[in-house]
Length: 160
Image (cartoon, rainbow, N blue to C red; front, side):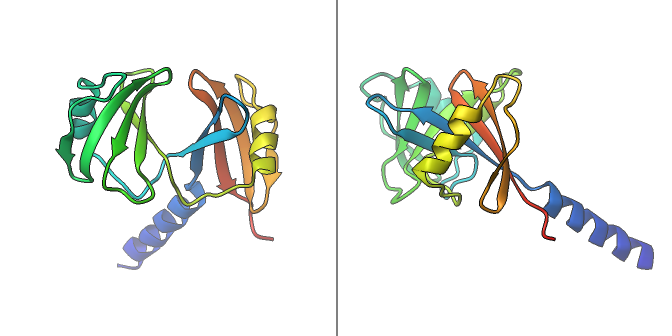
C-alpha cells in the first residue's frame, strides 16, 4: 500500500514538473502580433474539428452546431480557422496538423498573457532549431520558427 502511495505521489510530481505551455505567435500585417494558445476555454473534439474543416470556405462555411455552440469554418492564408459564434473570449480556433496529420488546435484566448515587449523578445529569438533559452517573468522560453509562425514553449522556472 505504501509503495502505491509513493508511486502516486511521484507520478503527480512528475506531471507538475513536465507541464508546459505552448504559444503560436504570428506577426500581423501593419505590425503587432496574434498569439494563439494550446489551451483554451472552448474545446472541440477532433471529430468536430475535422467535420468543420471540410466545410471551410474563404467566406465561411455553413454554420454547424458543436459542443462549444454554433461554429463556422474559414479558409485563411494560415489554414482553417473555426469561429465559435457563441464563445465570449476563446472565440476562434486555428487548425494545424503535425507531421503525422494529427489535428492541433490553437485557441484565440488562454491563460498566459505576456506584454508586447515580451512577445517581441520571444519572436526575435526564434530559430528553426530553437532559439536560445530566454527568461520571461516566471518562465523559461524557447522559440521555434514554424510554417504558421513562431511557437514558443514556456515552462516554469524552478523555485529556489
